[in-house]
Image (cartoon, rainbow, N blue to C red; front, side):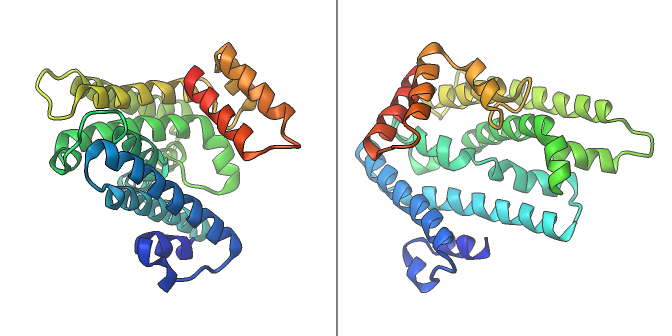
Length: 261
């Protein structure tokens, strides 16, 4: 993990670092090549180079993942604030959502991307995603020795605290962030273009769909149940070709999922 973090931090100068294993090289090149491809597409829309922002988003993500890995290995119990500082970026929405905003249509100048309003919407979206995920994964992560907000708050509770009380507290935090995000999205005077604000809200709704009842990301059965008929057809087709996949078929299936979800 340390090797991957250094590679991402160096970005274009990653050759100075080198790869400690083939697996690390595969992961880094997937991140690096995909980000550069997206940046080239975005440059045509934004009329400027945004690769520095994508590289920064990935660096924040892998640093947060390494912090969580270190906690699991050492048994360190972070404060709730420390946990969320790593838990929000480790959820992984940054490189996905913020990168896609550059392709939505409106130009996003640097002062908008670095504005408090833009980053508050991103933070509240992340809080919802991270805490919803934690609510549905805390039992599995307890067995894996990982830190989770539900388990962390339970450990910080006075003796006799119940898991149900902690879960209610986490749900209140999710609802508070969801309300704040909606207020920001619906503001009459906003420097963030409306189509971009819609993306923040839509992703928040998607995350709720994934995690409102079970861990939909980890549960194939729940994922299928939540899908539209068109998406289920795509997934079924993907499974039927699992033994003989090709790049073109995979690309078409991915596009189909994106269209019908």
